[in-house]
Length: 399
Image (cartoon, rainbow, N blue to C red; front, top):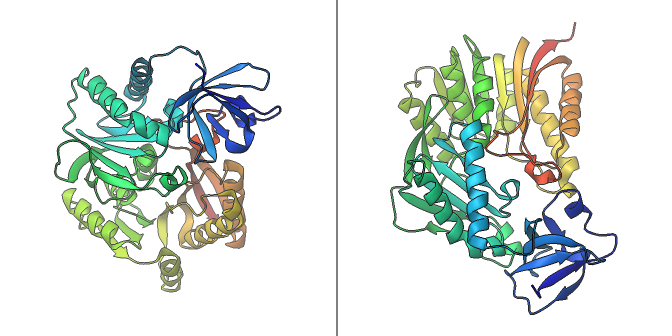
């Protein structure tokens, strides 16, 4: 191949430790008649072959790697291999009725996410090179699932992230193929949900907390539960399924709360689960002043940081929400808390929660440390694939 990117001497450190990205300032030279979106060779300063990837000079992430193995490849065969490997992994580790089928870099298909909700696929495409391969990838997913007797009846694209603008692309949403009803009913952990693939957050439902919701539900038998940032009620409903006496879910989004109420009715939990549309940061101090106390508090906030530059402010946010959550717990109650930002690493998050406990005059016993569901695999060397940290503590009053 006569299209190449040559790495500067001493650069490409992320690529060499196992990552799949090569940045614009790490490239010394581009060779050949290159168009953005092309698949090109990458070689080190001394000519050592590093692999093949697609290029986009409009992006700071200039090359995203597809393979590290060989200069000769067939793109259709490569895509089929990647998709088949991804699906075989999911079949071993998760309930595949609804799951993430393709997780971008972690499945060696950089920049594309595909979620399966029963017989519907939702696609998010964030990079130019993979966008050009999107139809091939979707076809491969449909074909490989069909070989297992799963017939996909519709595909919807939710490529709305502003990350596309960094690639020189416009955000986009719409059907890929025939239109279908945008609301789908799924079942996860025995709980039914209405998923709106057109207007719900991200791809319609947060599949990464699948088994964390189940772990939290196990703590809730006979408990009074507070679920903060409840979104469409998933943790709250798992608490109810786990035998909670009562559950209160809070979220600032009216769309999310309305869906959560519908989900509670769908599962027959409307008598024990209630939802309130409110700002969680404002609501928790008011609950404390009213003397409300809970056996289990669940904190599943949105990412407070999406860059290294905002980590300090994010730490303040995580500390405050955890402090307020702990103050609402009864002695020996349980706190389930998480961060979904890969910039908040495990040690920093644990330290932040510990400092919140000291300020709240509480002591913590770590019960369980968890991550995202295994259909969102973590690949060592690709830091961005490890983003969700989920901690369960038993919380004691200081004595």
